[in-house]
Amino acid sequence: MGLEDFMGVVSGIATIAESIMPESRLQEDLGLDSLDILVLVTEIEDRATGGREMPERMVARMATVRDAFLIYCEMSQWPSGDSDETH
Amino acid sequence: MNSERAQRMIPPRMVSARVLMRPITPEDYPALYRMSVTEPVNSLWRFRGATPGFDEFVQTLFRGVLCQFAMTSPTDGKIIGQVTAYNADLRNDHCYASVCVGGEYLNSGLGIEGFGLFVNYLFYQWNFRKIFLEVAEMNYHNYESGLARGIFQIEGRLREYLFLAGQWWDQLILAVDRESLEKFNSLNIGR
Image (cartoon, rainbow over all chains, first blue to last red; front, side):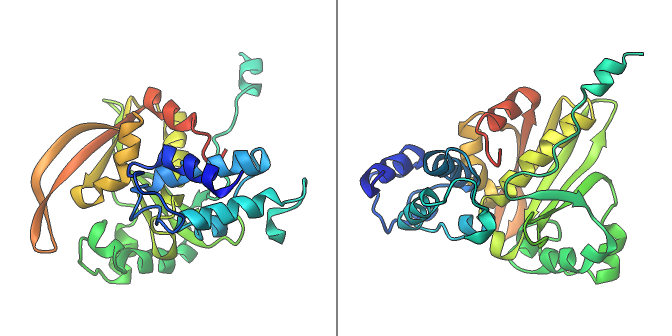
């Protein structure tokens, strides 16, 4: 999934999605609250790894749309059966 | 005796992808105290700006509490926050619950993830009909999507109840019941 499609996923969750940009801040600019952030995390987990969990240190890095997309890309590269702790 | 039914019992879930709930021990008291009296938690949560001493904090930590847990990281054991059930009314089957997350975990989503674990735990252990949350108006934005998804309902509003930052704020009473909790569970957060 490319960045444009990923931004579509985010806009489906955001309450303020009119001018979503890669540098848009998830909370301040797009209105995502804590539960929305977790819904986005779950979407990334499902789409990138088929359901393997995102560790909390990666969740803490998700400030912008671009941050979330880079995490999606990183998780998509996880070898199957690899431990989260190695990343 | 129905031993088959007992054998099929599933223990309550105490860990999700990013949060592990465990009992609070004396070794946790300094970290919980620091979290409680450090901004912004100090202004927004239990002490509303007051700074009790450590001994007073410890003495009141379990006052009025039905149960509470430290929320910790499953990977390094660091304390993320605290969940508390209080003012339990076992005659009328309801209680209040709160969640507090401090420092680097603020606005990370981990508070909601842990709170979801905790509310499931409360409904597992007791025959509650509703669990109430006291939400200050300045924190209301953290619950908006939960309200929109039908996980929480507004049960009441106490107008101009809290004073902070030079102005009066309402306090809202939200509620979650077993049916609305399933809407949270269906999101599969933290699996």
